[in-house]
Amino acid sequence: MQSDDFPWIKSYDDGVDWHMEIPLRPVFSMLNERVERYGQRPAFDFLGKKYNWTQIGDLVSRFAAGLQALGIGKDHRVGLFLPNCPYFLIAYYGVLSTGATVVNFNPLYAPEELSHQIKDSRTEIMVTADLAVLQTKLGSLKAGSGLKKMIICRFRDALPFPKNLLFSLFKPGETVRIPDSDSVIWFHELIRNPGKPLPPAIDPVEDVAVLQYTGGTTGTPKGAMLTHANVTANALQSLSWLKDAHPGAQKMLGVLPFFHVFAMTAVMNLSVLAGLEIIALPRFDLKDVLRAIHKKKPDFFPAVPAIYNAINNFKGLERYDLSSLKYCISGGAPLPVEVKKSFENLTSCVVVEGYGLSESSPVACINPLKGKNIPGSIGLPVPGTLVEIIDPEDKTTPVQRGARGELCIRGPQVMKGYWEKPEETAAVLRPVEDGSMRLYTGDIAVMDDDGYVFIVDRLKDMIITNGYKVYPRNVEEAIYRHPDVEECIVAGLPDQERGEIVKAWVRPKQGRTLNPDDLKSFLADKISKTEMPRTLEFRTDPLPKTAIGKLSRKDVIAQEKAGK
Image (cartoon, rainbow, N blue to C red; front, side, top):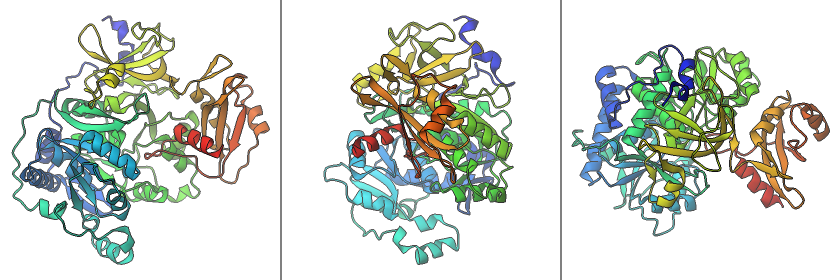
């Protein structure tokens, strides 16, 4: 390849090396190194109960040994159905230390969705907690889901004194009593062993560490097979970006749920690799987040745009000191320019937009932390990653620089394929002449002469009205520029005359009002007549969001259909 094939290298921050060595190794080796080097330093803070790296390492070893006593090892899949808490970190690394595969489950799933994923992944054992919100769903699973055993973690045991006592006294409805049975294994009993697991023989390139379920580019849930090499490579690629990080001496705020691939890498695994103390919150509550930043003083705060936007619009923000924040990486959804600017002005923290997907473990691009940080761009490819903009028609030919095409990724973080779905795998992973695999993301993008990538939209989200292509993100960016807008989603709706029409769902800021004529007048010089929403719907309630707080176009369209 010619040097012009890597235009992003010249835009890198000093010290970031695209050609850096990325060793292929097991995921659990990252934790072992951290325990050895930073044993007595803080590792995990859960609502005030703290663990150092030695304590985490000991619990992981005993959990792994307990699993091996049950016969768990290679070719087994163990589900994690937990909120953010120390049990998640311990179980994740404990499962991987046996050679088994972690299957992440979303605690917000309905029983039918849980049942489908359990059957599809052939998960036989689930690690969960005695929380009512989890057990109600697990208890209503259909017979035949395939789940044989549950490892139950007592939630109050994860809390510090006296919160553990107060939790039992004042929140008895939060947990449920689980009777002993052959299918129930208690966490505290499982770890009653010397903690001497047998080290598994791992082939980092072939052995699957995580089954990460995703709708992918088709919407059908599929398990992205992320190998040990994929997961460790992406953690190292992410750390390479943080040239100012001080391993073993800084803090990471974990608000995003660990079961989601963004938090798995950018919060949990990155912190393990760098020895950062994880300040974990079990769920997103805006006041809890602000109190955690104010009192715990984290340095890093990965989040989705909706969380930054919520902080921007919080009444009484002046009561909280957010000055400890140094870098915030936004992912999971496009970061509106106005949201970025407002958060940076309020906190003096650098907010950079990144990009990734479950199939790439997930991080593929990030804006530089010190160099040119272009609003609206997803940034530059991370080290070892080749981003190509390919003709969406022939699926082979790179387009000219600056032209639109399908964003494709090659690199050590690209998944092995979809679990037991060869046809779906072949649709998104295609071999290239040099033997590498090219991942087709379904996103339409452009790359400028400096290597910065801009997502124009998703192929499946593109609206075609009267034969003209409309990209929802472009319209959303324009709407967000209105000072009274807090949230918006733009999507296409079927129309007999035009094929599709553009509709926008808008939530004004608290205490503000908007009407269609005023908003359309505001947009008149910002978007074309073709892009102008033909229908505007204003809502006082928050727009629908996914489990990680990302605005959900799919759900708002489903609401639209249900309403009609």
